[in-house]
Length: 127
Image 1 (cartoon, rainbow, N blue to C red):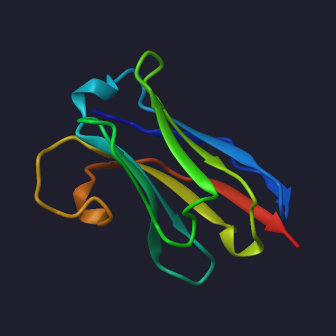
Image 2 (cartoon, rainbow, N blue to C red):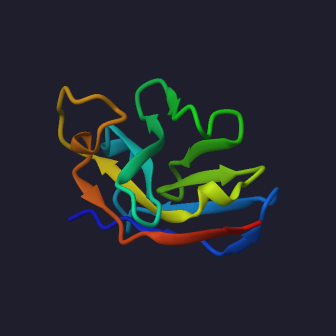
């Protein structure tokens, strides 16, 4: 069973940077279709942040993070990263890592695309 584990969340000032990591507990990234980051802000539903596909390494971003966040993967470490720059208070949320193992036709920005989820890591951006 795949057990994604996020880390790297913390309190940071607006304008600062953080890098989140998601390790797949030894499950090889090359055996996935892709991975993604979602987030849930206080009082809101979970929303898409970024995704990376194994085939071709294509990346996808939500408009509200485009140009500020970068998703990348390290197959040797079975880890996916989310580099977050120019953080804003509205980026405050619990960030979740998700893994796409089984084939589906759902859009990469849909929660339904992903089969395993981590417990989340808290990111708090102070103004």
